[in-house]
Each structure stands twice: as C-alpha cells, then as structure tokens.
Length: 425
Ligand SMILES: [Zn+2]
Image (cartoon, rainbow, N blue to C red; front, top):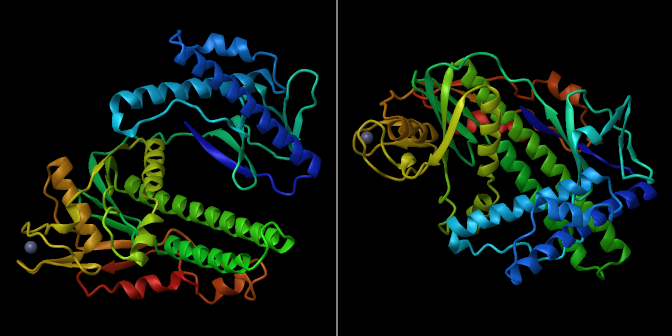
C-alpha cells in the first residue's frame, strides 16, 4: 500500500530554483503538444491519438528524462479518459476536453529513474543534461517522486507502507463528520468516540484574520512595489504554515478514529457524507465557517487509513440523520450541542445522535445510545511562532497542554465549554 510523503524544498539557490522552474515549464510544453494533437484530431473527426502516437510525437523533443515525458502523456490520456466518462455520466457538468495552454506542469519521475544516495537524491533530466540533485534522504521504501509547486516547491514522494495484518472484526461503526466535532463514531457495541475539530477551526480563523490584516496593509501600497511584495510573501508564508498545521491536525484526528476502530474490532466503517449541509444561507459568519469546512478531506483520510487497517469502508449521504430522535423518531433540528427530544425527553450528544441513526439507516440495526463517550483532541495546537515567549517545555510542565483523553459522561450534565477550551492556548 502506498502513501505520499511531502518534502518541502525551501532555501533553494537561485540557479537551482530556476532549473526546477524550467523543468516544470518544459513539462507544460509537453502537455500543450499533447493537447494540440488531441484537439486537432478531435476537430477533424480523425481517430484520437493514443498512447503510442503521443509517445512518438513527444519522444526526444523535450529537455526532460524520457520517462518523465512519458508520465506527462499518461496523465494527459488519463485526463481524456475521465472527461469522456464524465461527459457520458454527468452531461450537466459540461466537461471540456483539455483546451488551455499550460505554463507549468508537475514533473514526475518513476521509481526506476530516481537514484537514491546517502543524504541526497538524483533526479535525471535526460541524456547529456546534468541531473537535479536534492539534499534529501528518502526512505528505502520510496517509489516515484513528483515535483510540485504549492506556493513554493515541494517533492511528493510515494512511499510504501506496511498494512496491518490483523483480521478485521465483525463490529459495525458509523462516523458522523462535523465542523465543530470532526468525527463522532459509534459502534454496534454502544461504544462512542468524539474527536474535536475546534483546533482546526481556530487555526482557520487565525489564518483568515492574519491574511485580512496583511491585505489591508497591502491595499495602501502601490501594486508590485517593494513593500507590496514583502507583504505578499508574508501572506504566502502564513497560509502555507496554516495549511501544514491543519493537515497535521487532520491526520492526527483521523488516526485517532481508526485506532479506536481497531481497538473495538470494527470490520465495517460507514462514513456519512454531509454534502448538502452547506447549501443553505446561514448568515455570513456561519457561511464562512461552512465554506472552509473540508469534509471531503476527512473522508479521504479516513478511507485511506481504514484501508491500511483492513477495515471495509464506504460512504453515503447522511441526510436527515442528525435531526431524528433515536428513541422515538420525533424530528426536530437541535439548537445546541445537546439533543433534547421534545416528545419523549431523550437527551444525548448531538453528533452521536447522527452517528447512531446511521446504524439503522445503513446497517439496518437498532443500536442502544451509548451511556458514555471518549472525547479526544487531535493533538497539541502549538504556538505557531518559534520566537514565542514561553518555551514548549514550560508549557507542558504546567500541564497546560491537554493531550490525553477526557472521559466525559453524557448523562452527568456534559458541558461542551469545559472540555474544549484548553485547545486554544
Ligand atoms: Zn424522542
């Protein structure tokens, strides 16, 4: 099983930087060549160029390694294939075949082209041209690599990871994704876990405010002036850092869900897709939060991690699951974190109600509402600045950093405020 490891290529020398840039521009030229060939064939109602035609048309003409060139043509053909299928299955999307000229395109090297040496990696650029040398120690299990621009160069390395060998259990579990609580998991054995997403939420808010502050300053500068450029790079730096921290939090959160599933011997995992929740207009503050909620990433990470753990995983729409009482079926929209039934007096955690109702809907089993649940945070949200006044060790000594589980009973007056506050250090 493969996963992707991301290496940032910061502090590159100007020559090095220019070479990476030139390589991406060269890859874009290959793409443009494929696009022209395909477009001409399509418009003249001739047979579309296949793999062999494209490989022949691009062979030896570009300043890249022969296999890097091939990988661009393969990506192009995969793109054509997907577009063709989408045009058949989803005509309303009006998908267009590639038509835009690209200026840059990611460069890939397959596993056999990458040369790993202790402390550095050599990426060949074709016969007669010097290889790219990057000071990275790639793991032994690494496979193909791709050079990607993401507000700065990154090397995405495909790495083989071992799969868990333990046989899956028989228990079913459902996950209710949320914006405040990233995941609420319940099992058929009435065990429950909630992983909070407030850390991610606050990181996003922090990012939005920081970007806003800098944009205001930028609006007073002449465009492309020295100060404007400084502010622009500060904005990029801020958003890149926020992205990395959010990604880390998301990985930790989804890992906690999967660890819980393994502990509870879960064999099948259902993830409710909250698609449609964002459609309504709920005021500008809530609309911003909703548009920044990346639930598809949660689904992706959970699917990938559960595959590694040999847990069968599938998704479906969770529509209406969180507004129905699990004990009497009465429907109403909950106001706060606590679900209180107006008909039968049932009370329980709102996100767990959604998760419990999915059991009836997708597995056809009635599950008792869990008497208690485990409440976890994804991990520490560290102070972003390295120059922060308080050193990390002192923070952990004073016990300010909550890390371990707090087990909170849902029946003894659970208050969301108590348990969640310490995350925002
Ligand atoms: Zn009820």
